[in-house]
Structure formats: C-alpha cells, structure tokens
Amino acid sequence: MDNGRELIEALVQVSKEKGIDKEIIFEAIEASLVSACKKHFGPTANVRVVVDRETGEYVVLATKIVSETVEDDMAEISLTDARKLNAQYQLGDALEVKIKPGSFGRISAQTAKQVVVQKFREAEREILFNEFSDKQQQVVTGIIQRRDRRNVIVSLGKLEAFLPTIEQIPRELYHFNERIRVYVLDVKQSSKGPIVNVSRTHPELLKYLFEQEIPEVSDGIVEIKSVAREPGIRSKVAVFTKHPHIDPIGACVGPNGQRVNMISSELRGEKIDIVQWNEDPAKYIAAALGPSKVVTVVVNPTDSTARVVVPDNQLSLAIGKEGQNARLTARLTGWKVDIRSESQAAGTDFLVFPELEAATKKEEEETLEAAYADFYENTEEVAIEAETADITEEIPAEETATEETTPEEAVAEETPATDEYYDDEYYDDEYYDDEYYDDEYYDDEYYDDAYYDEHETTAQQATAQAPEAVAEEDV
Image 1 (cartoon, one colour):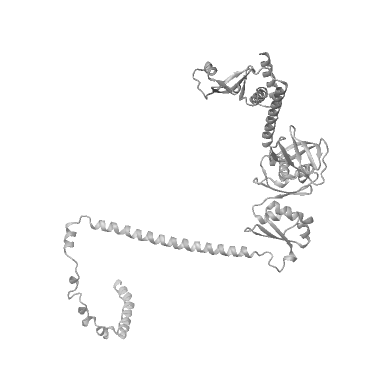
Image 2 (cartoon, rainbow, N blue to C red; image 1 turned 30 degrees about the vertical axis):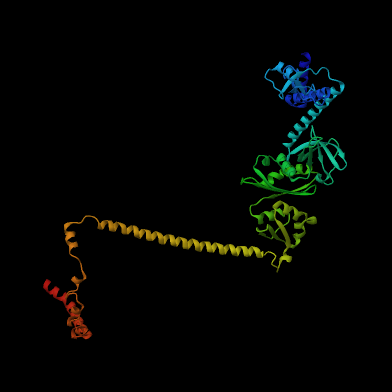
C-alpha cells in the first residue's frame, strides 16, 4: 500500500515538472507493465494492466479461450476451470483471468522503464508541438546558442529553432547569448521532436516591429497596408489612416525620427521608406517611387501594369541602385512598373495602351447599347401603361350606361336618332344650293368694295357731328 502511495506522489511530481497530464503518465505505466508481463510470461500472453488511480495498485488480467485440452496456460483455460468462475461459460468463449505477475526480472524491468521513458518523450514532444504550432507566423524572442555549419541555432526556451542562411540578413553578425527577434515560419513534427524554422528577412517581422514601437499602429489608428523588403538594405512601408487630423507618416517617423530609427537599428541599419497609401493606383505608385519626382503615371488595370514618366535628372533615382527602388515599388504596390524619362517618352506612344483604349471603346459601346435598351424598354412600358389606362377609363363609361335611367331619358332613348331624320329637305345639300347661297348672289353691288368705301366715309362724318349735336341739346 505504501508503495502505491509513493507511486502516486511520484507521478504527481513528474506531471507538474514535465507539464504532462497524469492520465498520460498512468497509460504509460500500464503500457510498460504490459511489456514487462510479455517478457515474463512469453509473447503469446494476451494481458492488460489496470492501475488504480487512487491507491497506485495494479491488476494484471490475462485473456484466455475456453477449450477442451489446454496446450498453453497463458492463452487457454479448461472448461472445468472456466465454469468454476462462471457456470455459463461454453467452449470457445473468451474470459479475463487475474494472474499474479510475481517479481519481474531485470530484463522485464528494464523494458518497462524504456516504455515509460518513450511515452514521456512522446508526450513532451506533442506538448511542445502544440505550443509552438500556436506561435506559427508570429514573432518571438530567442537567444543565439551556436552555429551549425551555416545555420544559426536559436533557443526559444524549451525548444531550439533553426535560422537558415537564406533567412538571415546579409552581413548580419550573430553573437553567442545575444537576444534577437525572429519570425516563426513553420513548425514540423519529426521523430526527434518538433522542428521550428525562423526568419529574420520576412516582411511580417518589420510589420511586427512597427506595431511594437509605434502606439498608433498597435491601437489601429494607423494601418500598415503593405510591406516590401530587401533585407539589410532597404524597405518600403505603405501606411494609411482614416483620421483626418493624424499624419500617418509623421506618426511612424516620430520626433526627430526616433521611432523609425529604433526599428532600423533592430534590423542592423536597414533603411526604411514610409509612404502614404492611396486608393488611386496612379497616386500610390507615384508616392512609392519616392524620393524621386514623378511627372505622369498611366495604369492599365487589365494586366496590372503602370508606365511612369520622370524628369530626365530623376531617372536614375527613380530606378535606384541596380533597380532596387523600382523593384521595391513593384512589390509594395503589386503593379508592374515601367519607368522612362521625359526625353525618352517624348514623341512615342509610351503612355498609350492600345488594349486599354479598345476596352474603353467597347465599354462605351456596351454602355450606349444598354442605354438604348433601357430607353426602348421604358417606352414599351409607358405604352402598355397608357393602353391599360384607356381600358380602365372605358370600363366606368360602360358601367354608367347600365345604370337606371329617368323616364325622360327613356323616352329619348325610345326615339332613335337615325340618319333618315336628318336627311330631310332642311338638311339636304340641295337646299343650300339655292340663289341665296350662290356665289353670284354675293357678287352684287351691295358687296362691292366701292360700295363699302362710300358708306364707310358717311359713317365717319356722322360720328364727327354727333358731339356737336349733344352740346346743342345741353344748351
């Protein structure tokens, strides 16, 4: 009993030191005892071990088959012995029987020890793998331990990481016990444990340093849109903010350049250009080409290409040493950039994209066709609505005709207005063709122009004498 309690206390202590779950330790002990029993009883023994989680005592159970003749005591049991345990057993049944393991030999004990150690190692590897899997694609701080050929071994606490040559900053010196920040590329499981690969050249490392050194970036006031690096030489960072009263570039640079200088010193003097991100690709590319000045930028969205014209004295600055500035601009913006000077672009179609003009023309034609289609469709809808309105207006008139009529209206309705009623002598065309309506009748002296001129003069004289007559009557 005392041995069992000591075992439980030892397991609890190991669980705390190694960070391994107690259940995993119990399973490891049970597996080790099973291995020891097979070494003791032989490979044909089908046994399992159950350890009490409270007392630490264990029981060995062997699975046996009921048979008439027993050839292997560890694998078979007679029918008589089986029915002593339970009268219901029949031939061919399988049952578990408690056996006494006795004292294990040296080889059995050593085998059990190896199984326990192996289980512990597997558990530790699994814990480490799960721990660093969560840190994948993150930045961690490590201590340089040594060099393995051209690789650098960095201690991350419980685990060592590999910094390959391709992920090292050119001409950077790594000193023993020096603390550095690295970006975790990936974590892989292997037979020797988790393998962690880290980087000092990844763009996310620069982004992480901005978040650590600049409060506006960590608070989300200033957003880092894109990062392009040539490790150890030069980098470009595009920043943006929605706050109109905050200068994103000034916030990243800091007073007298303190903030950006801290980041640069962490990367062994890497120069950092901070540019303003813009939704307009032409303006964004012009800003990314800084510190050179830009005259014109024309973009082609169909294949993400841009053509830039700069002053003659700014061409080498825009391209950069060995094309460095142009490469960083292309990586930062995601556009293919072609740069020429004003004299090179003059008199050429450098700024003309034939495919873009064709696409624009086609788009205009499609827009015009769509406008015509909408117009005709609206016209048809208006015509249909008008016809529907006419039909709707005719329906009440018919309903009104079916309403009850007054006696006078009934009498009027009984007298049909036939065409014969109007075809009498008074309305006959011949009646109007008499002498009174003949054109010759009007061509007499009474309608002569001279006649009207004479009578018009007489009427004017009478009008002039009328006031005198009125005056005499008043006297």
